[in-house]
Image (cartoon, rainbow, N blue to C red; front, side):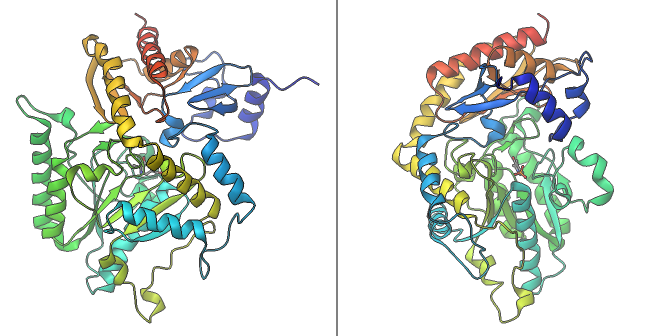
Length: 448
Ligand SMILES: *Cc1c(COP(=O)(O)O)cnc(C)c1O
């Protein structure tokens, strides 16, 4: 019997699997300009993915920003194999277990005890909705039910369920469903690409904060929370901004009694250089969302961490004042154990220090691109590096992606923004491989 090849899996997947974030016709219709073959993956090895024909791809975007320490990581695998024989899952209402307790304690410690209460779900969008519901319900519980509206930034992305779309400002995800959504107010982003002549990134941050201030002065009484992606707005196209914005936003939220929700789903877990991105502004949010990297990229897990003040406002004899949100797999033991193994690696390998070196290597590798006539805004925050490509070709993103695959690299631009967000185990040699793939894919995609 022949082993199935890429072509077999590709055909079966196209027929039976409805793929996310995808116009399926682009997979199915060969010969069309948008045609994009699926890549069936047989196995993963460190930073590499291997297909059924034995071709390898260096995972330059951490499999949608989730994978931190490589595919099939021996230490996370060992922890999960151990956990499988102990407890795979138990309902978290009325029950508890070792991995969920230990993970909650360790996350609390990582916030210096500021966010000491961990609420669990399975995906990032649910974490967003939980944070919004917690904020809204907090204000109702303390007798301020009029505080029921939310603020988000231009270009924000907090997930795609109907509730999370309320605070997501990416047209391609939102426009089709706008009639279903109770939209939040969108305020200017501190994205430093918007700098006017002579403005520094901190100046752009102060200008955006001034817009937030004037909105809060007029409408603060009705606003429950501001939700932000600290330092990097990922899905907007790796829009980066100065930590000054976080400091000012924190002050303004305090002044107007508005919660600050930090969505660290993409930027948390060491991605921008500190364990949490908000630490770079020396502030703490009232609520924080985590997902993606927290389980090492292994299992669906998300967490909302909350302050004592918020948590305490739900304590009462009345059940209606409790936070009754629930998911079947809340606090899944395997996912929590994967997260504990991930945190162990952070501690034992001194990952944040090692990443500083790798970030320097990435910067040095990409630096020559700054001279490319069509490259704009080469930028970086820790282990996220990005640049924009000046082209009017509507198919640039797909062409670049395919050209990178041809050069054994998984790099999937967001519109005209090319970015790297590799797993932290990427070696210097592999960074060089990604750099060469980018340079060559850029030439291919631009037809130069
Ligand atoms: C990915 C992401 C989400 C949504 O997480 P899902 O698990 O995909 O629902 C929310 N916020 C940010 C900042 C993200 O990057």
